[in-house]
Image (cartoon, rainbow, N blue to C red; front, side, top):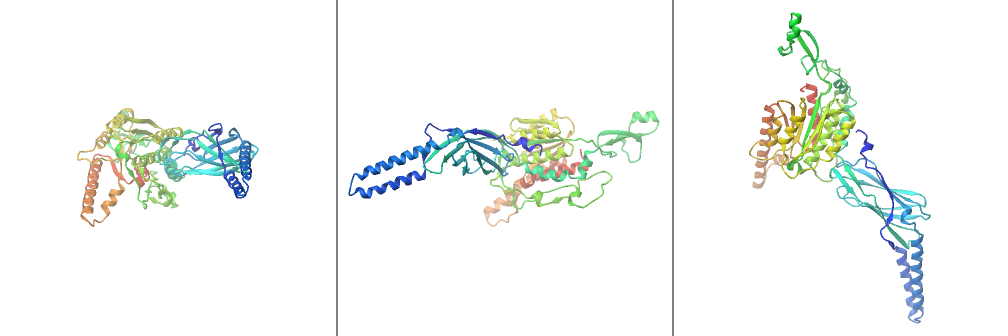
Length: 505
């Protein structure tokens, strides 16, 4: 991943501050000393003057508390820092470190609590550490983000006391900051870890000279019987007095455009099956089977199913379909850019949320990550026609358009299908529908009661209708498929590699 250090939120550091002028409390030994003073009550039964000794004892204990309170380091002598070890990533564990530095002359024991929203951590992290005078100590905890986008992180609250344990101070460190939670960053790294090491990727990034394939002119040569009529250069034929054919080559750079639907249908939460395995096409040398390169230079063959690539991360809570779509878009963008292609992005709801023209480079990948992190689901129907219109007017070069969406259960043809079909005369469309694991499980289960029978029939009807709609799109030239959420990223990358190997663009 490009410059992961740049994605890490900045480290915050500030001296602690007192909540109020006398922000303190009593520690456990103060109350123990008061209880010991009650021992004077026994002799007071015989001589009430001994009660004055009890009163004197309480005064001494309170004075001891005041002295202990004053000897504690002032809040300004306590510096607190919050450091993020890795970029916060959706549904992935990441560590946060809280460092406390004591500039005072006495060792203190610090109890701290970091104010984090539930979107980052289910429970507020609490720790107790000991900080020596002039030294520092660090407490670390784990966050597990469940939402993307910008999240406000609050202050850090501290209580600290000395070895006497009579008094404690209450302070707060204003470490408030806004952090950005990115899509799952582990998936694209996992895919490109194998792709970058492949010799076939290097072959794909070089110009491939394929006769009759591609759209970029390379040279002229004498006509052969296997050449197509449309490849004949009539001007060169007239000059030479014999048939001359054009030789084309596949372009080094092709365009991939990602279109992500953020409408109401993508807000549905779903959990992938526990045994879901993702398989995607990889170059053959990754499987350690050395095969000679073919004449056409096609390197994307075979399918590799491996736990290293396929095992889904444990989920603490179901993600939305939009989250899976964003993760898949980022994975494909990462692989496409490493393959030498330019990549663009459109995210939309009722209005266009973001548009990035097709480009390449590490900085462009960073922009894609930032835009995908900020994609927010909308509770209204998405304007699919607007997305298609933006694609047709802003990007006229033929491209692979990967449209990630869901289908509404209506009698009429969904608007998203009509919008995607408008792109077919100009672009190659990979129409990816996020499926319903629960629906598939319901249709696969044998009904044992009338209620389950009704559910079974309804599930079968929905699945059949979806397949009919996708089949109609395939008849018009689109690559229309339905993928389960847990397999969405790997299957889309798989389709992209197959399109590259077949030269469909």
